[in-house]
Image (cartoon, rainbow, N blue to C red; front, top):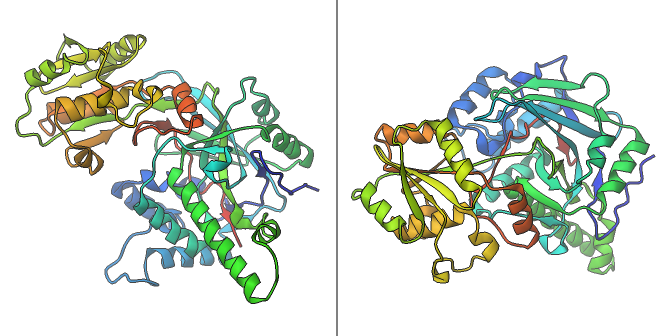
Length: 458
């Protein structure tokens, strides 16, 4: 038997009996999806066409004319989830388990195939003030409100939060080496091979839980869903406390908390990946600026020289050459390429800047290329306001280097700023210091598929 009691002051994980699609009823490749916030309208249509049981109907259903409170995407999601459970589309595993999750892929811009190992388990929801779970991004109210409505309606988590922990020796990863064929295997639209093994051995599960107890956890992807789960937990705690009070149960709030400490809503489904994994890939997110009536490449170069060393490079560079230039220049620190329709400039070796250019940013944060770009180039050299950047009025965020170049050279944008990715060490140091990176600073690749395992709260 498992000891499912949690202990305070540490990372607390637990096995669970996951709901999983029955492979006898559906082809897994036709029902799992990318995370909800990575699903484009075109992808949504493709998912709808792939299967009547595709998870998109639950996590990002289509809006319909006449939608109103109580009869909308959230109520339909709850209906689909309930109906599919009743029909046996989902089967619940017999034993509490953790799930080894291995992704094999070729990173964009590389020819070298790599493999990333993680494991899926329940993680105890912790307030950031506990010093156990750390964020590295700010969140927005609107996405959290959307996910909270879905969680209230379905009472289930369909995608895993992507959590990072440090294990330099790879001890935990070594304990969960794959044995035999996977329980689930599918290749996604990005040609990422996703494989899952169920691990139900109580002794092995408890060993992994013990090894995780001293770990600090950093959220890689899923900040909005993590904070949504916290908000939902708090709602349920208040409801439980109110029920106890109405029943005239005279307990202190701390005693009430202890009684509900292991309630299902106190936990959320997570995939844990070690920070030192050679398969942990962070891609850059490039900035493409458009709609500037008075943009001039010469003016940009002139303004940039006040803050950086500026070198003009071959205007015909392709994506691969841009990556090489950035990689080499980035060894010495900040480096970015400014690509206009017929000019390309390398901005690197920042000059000592007025600290007033970085209000509210620590020295750690100021060292980030993305902070240098936003504070110095976008706001000062180009004159974009913080509000216009936040509202994406003149800026697009694009992962693919080729697409960024094409938008500029095709006349859809004034200039593209190509960057190196943020280093994992920078993410770790900033997060553990209680600080955050600007939005769209990290793009962990590949994403974790939704629907591989499902955690139902009831």
